Image 1 (cartoon, helix red, strand yellow):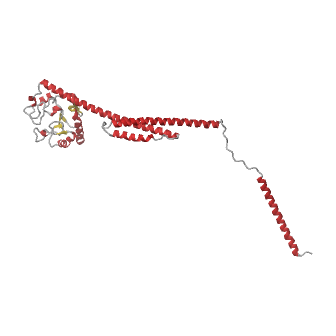
Image 2 (cartoon, rainbow, N blue to C red):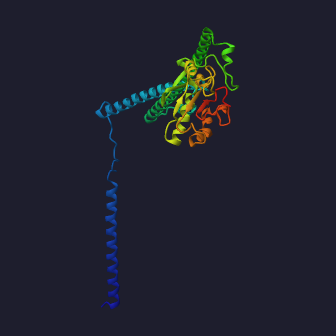
Image 3 (tube, rainbow, N blue to C red):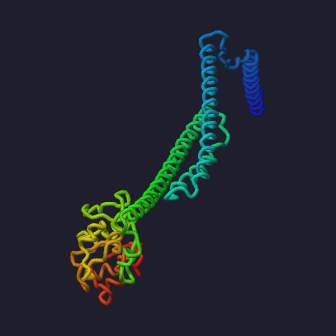
Length: 344
């Protein structure tokens, strides 16, 4: 009869056999699964769509490429055209700038053109490659050219104005010279251009001239705020500026009581027994270079008179020595241009 120990050994052996059988079964299953997976075909990669030549999609892409090429050609042509126009404007502006030197009243207009030329020089760089770059280059050059053309025209306008003013001055000077010649001819014809007539200016500060009192209308200009009075054309601006300063100080215009006098008018005023009015041909009123002023100025020591004494010379007008309180003929109202021969 088997012992207990034998029974235990047989039980353990059966357990080992069962475990081995289980392990062998699982290994077979795993091997079968691996073999089955390896036998499957590999999945094909994702294929890209193929555009067939002549398809609508291909035709659309080709049309877009052609349109871009045409747009680029137009942009290149526009950029080249803008470059040519800008180059021409630079050449014209450079010539204008050189020819206008010393021929404008205010050089600021030439400085503006110089700055425009500097800016234009920066716009002649490469056109660019892309459509946006080409279009930007054309637009930038066109805007620069327009600015340059405008600045060039401004300088030309300033030169024309400068030249017109010079021509006017020359014409006025010629008119005065002609008037003086005509007056002298008239004096000779009338017989008062002689030593006896000149000798009538008895005072040392009086200067006789044949045209005195015989100035033509072209040589005279009406005083704007007192049109009944006239002075010589070339001294009007200074008188106008003096009046403006006087008006700023006192709130009113200079009150003129006398200005240019003809030979006949001076002859009517002259009294040989008095120094109040100079002999005909000897008064600065006859030259268009003197005015008499009222409104307070006609009194020595008045605020108005003192203001004129302090400020008139800055505008080309003075109170002459002979008319001072200690002068030959005290006349506080008499004021004359510095161009008059006895002004100092």
